[in-house]
Image (cartoon, rainbow, N blue to C red; front, side, top):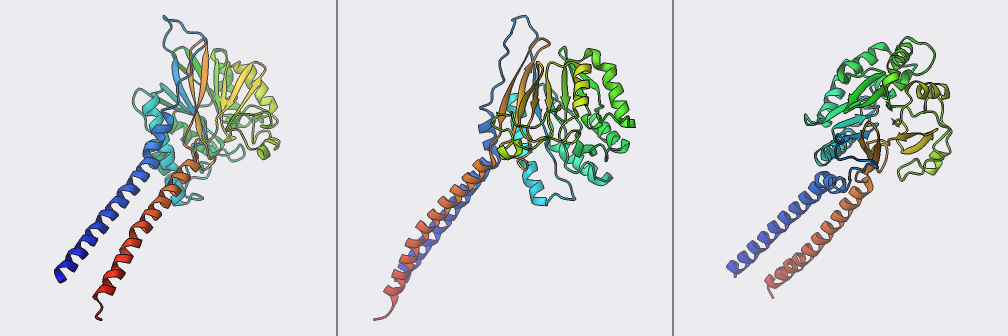
Length: 364
């Protein structure tokens, strides 16, 4: 009798261990899918756009990715778990996109950091190290960044020290021209386009004036002047409530005067901007401006980036969406419910058997 009960107990123990092992494997698979594979499954569906005009003898077009407003959290307002979660999401999304799409150039249109305008030396060094680790790239891909208001502060917070340390790390100057495959890009420090003749503002305007004759594309953090996002109708544009808000010049968008001056000096064929965290496409005469939404899930549920094929004569853009935060939450909730259901289904029979054997062993 004891041998039979011992064998039965050992069998139940083995079953329990197997069940626990299956549960752990299930949990590992769910986490691995949500935190790693999901980014590949979503981004692999994105395709480079097609150019309207192509020639067999033409130089291959430049493949460029544009993203904006990564807002790496700092030590002042950033909670450790929020930092860990958001940075992991952006790193996996960026690395997956780089591996699958293999762009020639990547532009980040400002607000790399959330607290660059406040950071002391140690905090700045830490933020830069984390950024460089997250947005690492292979030798055949070049990363170029534009300065934003959260990197050096709004106009009234901006100092030469903050600007210099940003330019030193990222080799960026306002009015810098980047030429690749016969295409000129200008990187504009739109925070400095206040028109009040401050030292930094005057230097920025002088640099833009100096190179204005050779430019045909523009990259800036602040959008060009527009009253609001009312006419934006992209899938990831601002919410209906946000579209009713009138933009403040020199805070939400460039001033009307600065926008007109920039258009006149540069005469670009395409403008890309960030700052608003939402998508928008507007026309300034016949010049399109694309506002790139935030790349961080902290700022929106459906981050995205722009993929562009560019030649000296033509360009074509396509948007690539990242996994939505809701999708990840739903998967975890469904997985949790299934795990709970399996646990209940497994434990109830064991409880019944234990009760049965206990009753059977009681003396009559």
